[in-house]
Length: 248
Image (cartoon, rainbow, N blue to C red; front, side):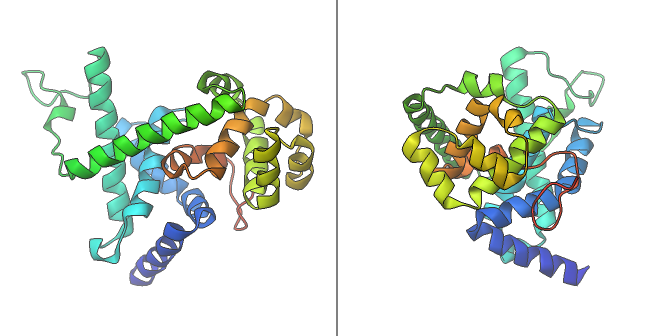
């Protein structure tokens, strides 16, 4: 166990400085992320669940915030996931008034309200402000590409095969800076080159052109928080091989 902890800590240190290493670490620890999500929502998470997306973002945050002085990385990641999911349920409760976990007592005190919150509120505020700023900057840049957030949502892949094709294309693009530079200069997704380089069907990518454009923008322009939040795009339910690709 000691050697495993040291190995994980070493990988985290690399991932703090290298986005591709962070991607690979998240892919390798998807079973852990899903397990922690399952503990909270009391069922196996689906790939489309908001809770799983939030848990992946929280894992990425744990990578960014980790230091050896904080002890076990996985314990930190588990706590970060739990805290983020607590935030989510409390926010939904405020917005809708009908989010309820198991009641804790006969007075109908909700379990979510009995969970202690030991995070640094100042750090949380900073992160939320930074996230809001990234979203505003991204929205402005997307307008220059003729895109909107709703365009990306509507063209996002719904089937696992399409999601896998988009994931492979995005991974290939991130490994080839010249392609990303071409995309930014022309404001056109280089579908033919992506399809050939990632060994996927071009038609599968064409159906999700706007989605790919939005994700590539996030991956190429320093949107670190949002890049962590959409990491689910780069993984799917199929196994990930050691080189970072999707096994067939």
